[in-house]
Image 1 (tube, one colour):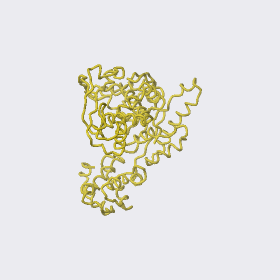
Image 2 (image 1 turned 90 degrees about the vertical axis):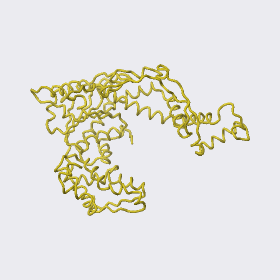
Image 3 (image 1 turned 90 degrees about the horizontal axis):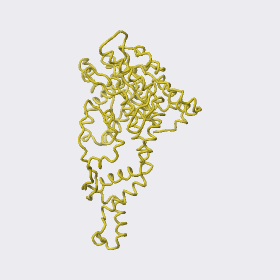
Image 4 (image 1 turned 30 degrees about the vertical axis):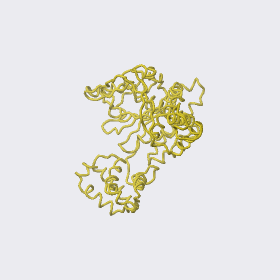
Length: 449
C-alpha cells in the first residue's frame, strides 16, 4: 500500500516494515532515515537541495535474513520505482557483462509501468464507457435493423436492451470479431540476453511500429468477455498521454528511485591481484559514475542519477567492504550488519508478518475446503528444524522455511481434493513424522534442503 511519504516519520516507516520483516532493527532504521531524508531534501532551498546527496547503504549479512525484502518493502511503501540487480551479472568469466547503465534504463521502465498504470486507473471509468459503446457496435453493427437484431422495437431500444444484457454478463460467451493490430515487423535476434535498450534501439521514437513495418489491422474472432479486455486496453491507451507518463516517470526515478545491488561482495577485489579480480574492479569503476551522479539516456528521456538511492548488499564471507575501491566505498557511507536468524526469529517469521508462511498455507488449502490447525508445539519444532539444518548445511536463513513447509504439507497439498471438509491438525508429532528422515540423515538434508 502506497502512503504519503511527507507524513511518515522514520519511526512510522520502521513500524510499517515490522509488519513484514522480523528483527533487523539497525537496517530498518538506516533505510527509514535515508527515506525520510528525501522528504527533508525537498524542503530545502533550491540552491542547497541539489547539493544534498543520498546516503547510500551497504547491508552486510548472510542470505535469507531480509536484506532484499527490506529494500523492496521500503519502495512498495512509498510507491517508489525499485529495481534489484546482481552485481555479478556485469562480469562473468568468459562472458561479456551487461552495460551497467542498463540498471537505470530498467529502472526507468519500471517507473513508466507504474505511472502508466496509475494514469490508466484515473481514466478507467471513461475507458470502460467507451469500451462498452465499442462492444455494442460489434454486437449491433451499423445497418442492422431492429428485426435483424431480434427486437420488436426501434434500433435505439435494441441497443439499450443489449447494453443491459452485456452488463448482466449474459453475453460473455457470444462470439464477436474485433480488430487487432498484426505487425510484419522483422524478427530481431538478441544475443547474450541483451535488451533493446542495450542495443540502442529507441522504440519510444519509432512511433507507430505497425505502420513502419507494414502492420495492419486484422479481424479476430473471440468471445465478448475477451473482446472487452482488448477494447478496454485500447481505450485506456488512447486516453493516457504517454509523453506525460514519461515526464512523470523520469521525475519519479530521479527523486524517488531505489536500486538494490545484490552480491556487491562478489565484485570486491583485494590488492595486487590480476585476472578475474581486475575485471571485478572494472565493474566497480563502471558503477561508480552511476552512483556519483551521471546522465543516462533512456528511451523515455535522460535520467540524472545523482539522487537515486543505492542500497548494496552482500554476505562478505570472503571479502569485506574495505576491499571495494576507495571511491566506491565513499559513495556508500552507511553500513549496517544484519544478524543471522535464530530459532525465535523463525517462530516469528512463521506467524507474525502479514505474509507469514503459515497464514499463506492455511489460506491456500482453505480454497480446497481443507482446514489446517497448527499447534504451538508444531511451530516451535519447525523453527528448531530450520535452525538445526541451517547450522550443519548452507545457512540460507528464512528461505529454509519454504522448503521445510513444502515437505511438511506435501501429502496434504497433493490429496487436498480427497480431504475436502476435513481439519488437519499439525502437531509436533506430525512435524517429526513428516521430517524425520530429513532431520536424521545429514547427507539427505544437504541434498534436499
